[in-house]
Image (tube, rainbow, N blue to C red; front, side):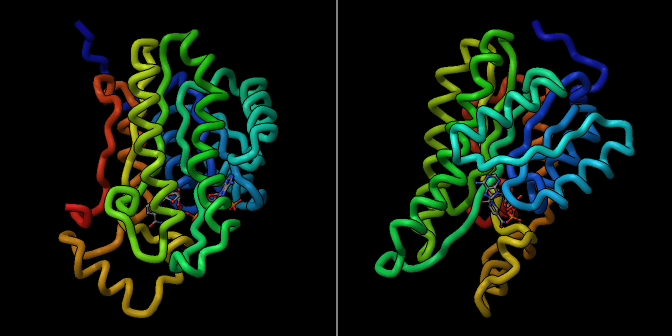
Length: 255
Ligand code: NAP
């Protein structure tokens, strides 16, 4: 029997790492986790100033925050990053694999490099970061991993073979790790957002945005905070019996 806690959404005492937290969904997620009481490490690859400014702003609200650079797709950089976080904030108990990029083009024009770069930032990044924190979580017999997939990983999208493959791969990774780590007390879930107002979608081709809105039952794109809220819920004790889930947060686009 699991006791009802006074605040099932509280993350007090947790240490979270959010990859790609300098802007967009990652920044909103770092904010949501910090507001719920977690200490948060904000990872960035190149946007150091943005990550440090956000960490400073959130710390002013009383949370423990740090900005930490590193390419999520590079094993050496991930190991250094985790060491830094654990020496400052303590052992990571919540990992949000959010880092990701797009390099869109039709298959016949897609370079091998564009394919590999997208897989590296998103899928390989999630693998490496999960691997780096899993041992500690298993030893502690608690922890949460949340992967940021996409409606595109479930449905595919012309012009995004690399991105769709990375995001579909994250679903397989999520379900495999949920099976592997569940018996050790670690939950692993994914969110599959629809289209969200961030830098990533700022330059959608003409007419594309209107088409997406038309196909979305809720009739609009999401705000980053609407994805972050679901991630914070999945990280919390309120979601204690959810693992291996792929939660659509897409305004109905994927129905
Ligand atoms: P965004 O605004 O373009 O931000 C991407 C973030 O990822 C930045 O903080 C960037 O850091 C970081 N990043 C990229 N490659 C990295 C790497 N190799 N290592 C570490 N950090 C890296 O993107 P977003 O729209 O917020 O998307 C966040 C996640 O949600 C992505 O995985 C994306 O695929 C997914 N998603 C987005 C949408 C959408 O409509 N926007 C929909 C579904 C899923 P720097 O600033 O330092 O480069």
